[in-house]
Length: 196
Image 1 (tube, one colour):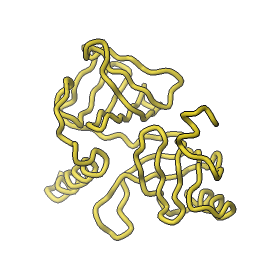
Image 2 (image 1 turned 30 degrees about the vertical axis):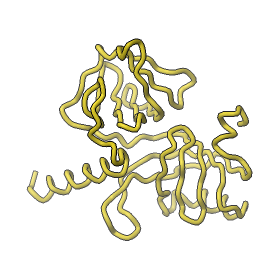
Image 3 (image 1 turned 120 degrees about the vertical axis):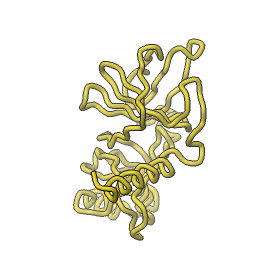
Image 4 (image 1 turned 45 degrees about the vertical axis):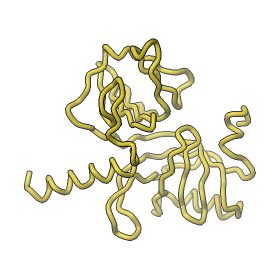
């Protein structure tokens, strides 16, 4: 690998740390300093200091959500898009030498800000810009029909590092592949109250 290519990969990784993890990056927990990647026979999970995670199971199933430590810090519990929490004994996890960021493919539900083309995920509270490209045309069309500044949307998509609009460093970006539902007058709070 050439020096400039290695520097480019390091720059993308540092940007991912600053944007995804935020200022709490480097926080020490019973799992060690976070962010970090952990693996076992079936899973790869990235844990972030804001208690969010990205999970890949058996190579093709991705999940995001919130993590916690339970059972006297011996069990990692992941509460995400799956129907039930996933409990993993910490003793079964192996910490990777370096963070290995995933670009997860997910079905997400959250608030789409039409003016800024920003999506805020209801589950994690994280916000990402939405890529403005051909794949995003369905979301733009749907939001134009409703004519609201904020819309509750369900989308299939993936999170990937993409350059910012101003040409600055890359950032995690939601790439919409399919719009499942668009509604106005709802909020993430409605989901926790059981309104779907």
